[in-house]
Amino acid sequence: NAKSPVAGTNTAPAKTAPAARIKFKAYYLMDQQLGMPASSVAIPEDWKGMSRVVWNIKAYYMPMDSQIRVEAPDGGSWVEIYGQKMLEWGRPAFNLPWGVMMPSGAIHHPNVSLPEALVRYVIVPNRRNARNLRILGYRPVNNLPKAFSHVFTEGVPKGNGICMLVQYELNGTPVDEEFYGFMPPTDAIPSPPAAMEYHSYLMLAHSIGAKSGKLESMRPLLGYIAKSLNVNPAWSKQVNQIHQAIVDRVSQQLAQSWENVRIGKQLGDQAHASNEAFLARTEAGLAQSRQQQAAAHASNGAGANDDFYKRADGFDQYVRGTEHMQDQNGVVTDQYTDYNYHWTDGNGRFVHANDASFDPNQYLNGSYQQMTPARR
Image 1 (cartoon, one colour):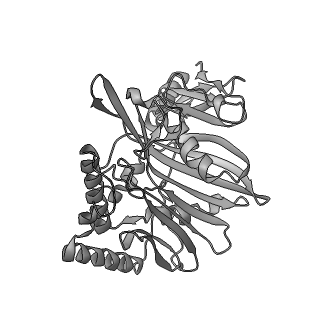
Image 2 (tube, helix red, strand yellow):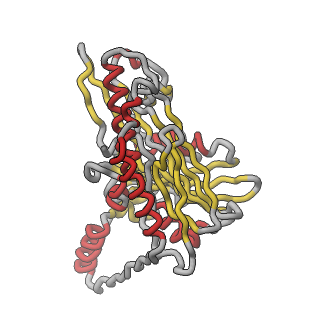
Image 3 (cartoon, helix red, strand yellow):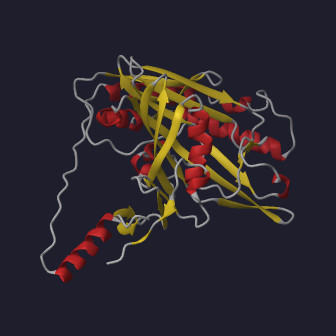
C-alpha cells in the first residue's frame, strides 16, 4: 500500500556513485514490538546509526511511527529518514487548532501545502535545538517516488515533491541540510451525515546534511545511502494486517489492545521464510559494487539573428521546464514551470508554490516579493 505507515524515503539521485573502495554494511531499523527488521540502509562500515519504531494501537489511522539516522564517525555528515505524516480535516468534529495531533494519529491541518507541511512537521520538530535556523528556499523534485519505486507495493504515486535547503548552527558549527518530501493528491472521503473528510500525506520525508560547508562534496555518498532504503516485505505485510485489524475494531467500537491484533503477528512459516529471504538479499546486495554514471550535459548557443535567438531560447525553456521571471530589482532568472507562483527576497533565495494564497513571509525569514514574467 503506497500509504501504509512504513518508513519513508528518499533523495534525488546522486551525481556520482560513492568511491568503489568504500565497504558497506547493512544498518537495520528494528521493530522490537514485532521482533523483526522493518527496513535497512547501506552505510559505510565505520558509520553508526540510531533508529526507533513506536507503536500506538489506539491511533487507528497512523498506529506506527519510525525514524532512522545514520552518520559518519565524526558526526560531520548524515542521512535521516522520517516516518510518514497524515494530515486530516473536514468533519465538523475537527473544529480544532491547526497542528493538533488527533486520536487517530493524524494531524489536524486543513488544506496544508507541501512546503508548510515539511517545515511544520519535519524540519521544526527535528531541528528545534538548532541556532539561527534559516530556510533559504526550495525547488520541485517530482521524480522522487520514481527514484524509489521499490518502497511501494501498489505502484508509484503521483503528486508533488520538494527539496528545501536549510542552514543553521549546531554547537557553533555551520550546517547545510536538504530536506525532501512528497505529497500525493488529497483524498476526499464521504463522512455522513453531511460532510467530507480529507486526508493528505507527507511521504518520503528525509534529509541529507553536513557540517562546515561539506554538503556538496558528500552529496554522492549521502544520496547513495538514502537511495539504498529497503523495506522488509514480511514486516510490511504484518503492519498492514495489524493496521486493518485496528480499523476494523474501531469501526465496531471495540477496545484496542495488542491482544486484539495478535493475529496480525501470526504469519507462521511463510512470514519467517520471507523475513529470512529479505535478510539474505540485503547482505548479498552489499557484496556487489554499485556505480552510477554522471549524465553528460551539453548546451548549444543561439544564432546571431534576434528572431532565431528568441525561438531557440523558447525551445530551451520548454525543454528545461523553466520560464524567465523578473524580481523586484529587475533581475531575470529562470524558474521552474512546475509552480505557478514564485517569490524571491532579491538576494538569491526563492520560494515556489501553486497555492495563490500562500505567503512565504508568514514563516520564512526574509522579505519575499512575488516575481513577474520577464519582458522580452
